[in-house]
Image (cartoon, rainbow over all chains, first blue to last red; front, side, top):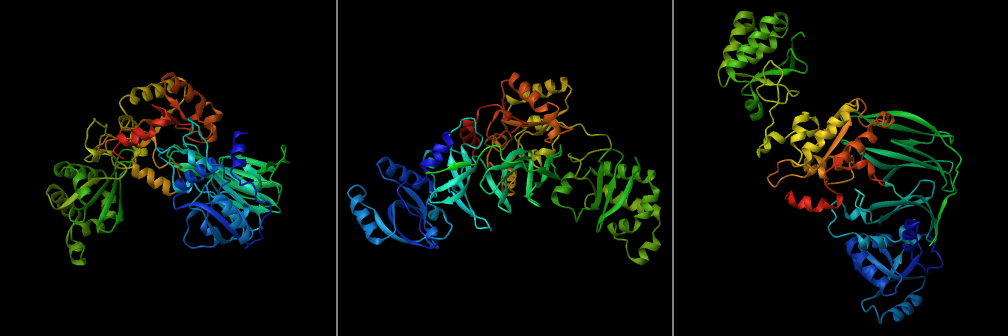
Length: 275
Length: 276
């Protein structure tokens, strides 16, 4: 439940309508930085001052040079943005308006923060965090659906990953989504079949190898299968998932064996994700 | 076990010895790398060993005569017809006996330089010399893996291994220490999620000082059978008896084979202490 709360607060409230693909918006920018760690702290400071804050990347505005910005407001007209800026200026002196042609199927289009608010709390002395662990990404599937790999920090003294966590969310537009997984490191190998979706997440370490878990969902995002120690999923017929079962022998050699796992009707409903 | 000569590549001859995985390579001193020269058998010993093998396996010597002729520089059609086997053998022995001629090198599967026909007993004494800590540390002998651990961890891991053996398992340390370079290489391949772990801790001079070990059953390693036979559960119990931290307790990302001396939050401190 705590995880879900973390997810909820990461979405900016107060953007009632979603722009069409490639729509132009005016962002009231309160801070910018090339470092995801620094922009997370800047956003946290602004939120603490009572501002809603959405971290965006300028690449989501189609720009080649990518930096992070904190959008205090996302307006669909220049006039609305100016009014917003006038309102915000007394407390955020450096704020300015940025015109942005939103890249279709980007995080900004879905109003998902590129850097989650929890990232501001990552301790300064962590060993295994990289910038890429701090930045969420949109994954565009060939069938037109989009997934959000939301990278967050969850404090847990027993976590060898130092709190590095990736939520997988099936985006439904307007900052809404369905949580597919609350912990899917290095998601990959996405496969679709008639709305069903399969992908793998990196799991346990085994000597010099990394084992994986395969997850399968129906079109609504309800779980159909979870196969531990398996990789490279495929969905041949909608009735089963085929993946390569992993084992590592005493010499550290990875052995892969094809396995077929029937897809079971979802017992639990899809987990909604709404702001 | 029969002895066998085989051409490995141009101007080199690989000889399989009498013992399991025992292998030697006959090569030109001039073509050998500095490492191979350093690892070559002492000349008198090499000649004695080679002569011993030839007596036992005359047929293979004849079969690979052209290769040996090349090594001795007698490969011209004229030369090969002029020299008989006895002369050729003597020529090899002469060249093995002197510096700058031929050398006999222990093969890649033999860990020690200068190995003789008897199975080698490793003597990995503690030393600050880093050269002995090179190579793939997952392939080191168990004794060496134990020595790559921090002195406080060593007896505890040994006790875990003994405890598991008493329970009827066949425990084997897969990793003690692992170099940072190896860690980086594994990370680059996407085979680990961390760039520095308790396996990578070293003294400031680079000598291994690992605070973690991975212990598997040599029959099942990381296969599902390990859990099915209760190996991981038992490993966790034995590790806790020694007050070690067990990776199987990590809810989010379990590391079943992993035992560790100190809690995870000390990683940064030990990284700094490693001079990294």
